Amino acid sequence: MTLLDSLYSLAPWHLLTRLGDAQILLPAVALTLFALLARASTRRLGFIWMALIIVATVITTASKVAFIGWGIGWADINFTGVSGHAMFAAAIYPVLMVTFFSGRWRGADRWSIALGCALALVVGLSRVKVGAHSWSEVLAGWAVGGAVSAVALALSQTSAIVLRPIVPALLLAWVAVMPFKLHASPTHSYVIRLAVAMSGNETPFTRSDLLHPARRQNALAC
Image (cartoon, rainbow, N blue to C red; front, top):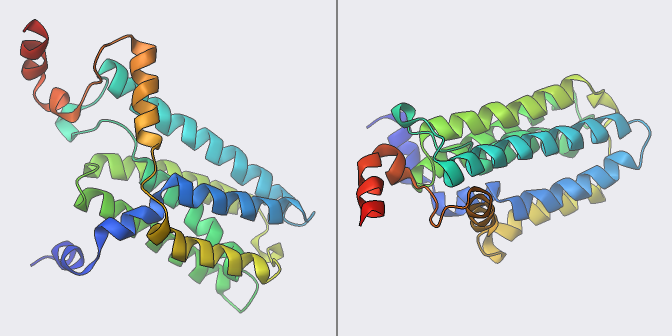
């Protein structure tokens, strides 16, 4: 049994994958941004992070719309678009963990970033395990989201991030509790509607169409 197989057998993947849901992470981001933008010492990080998340969201959505609407994908690597869960997790958790722990003890930045990356890793693994994405899509999500966190933290003074304890406490409670409370995010269905409306096709392209294009042609012919 490989290391990945061992991880798969131990983890409740359907629960862990919820940690990448936009409806869980974006409210956490909003609260964090409010706290960052309220202070001059952390305002730069807040603006940079917010702008980069918006850019990453546009890239991710565009990749999904391109495939669902027009079938633009890469069959050889089973790629139908950037994984949104992996992207959001990689873009948000490292910065979120820095806001939790930065400046509270020596070396906190290094460990908090490592913890955020570990959470993003788990979310990406969960997307493969639950059958939502291929490895190429998860890797793309990690790359796009990881670039957001890396650039935001590199261009900011993390030593200045010392938020009031109530902010990390609220964030921790939200991220810990909401996966049990909220239903699965409907964002993917919205993307499908957008893609179909933009392309004018009656039906969306699917992974099966990418991997077995002859089947779609036969179905349309009928």
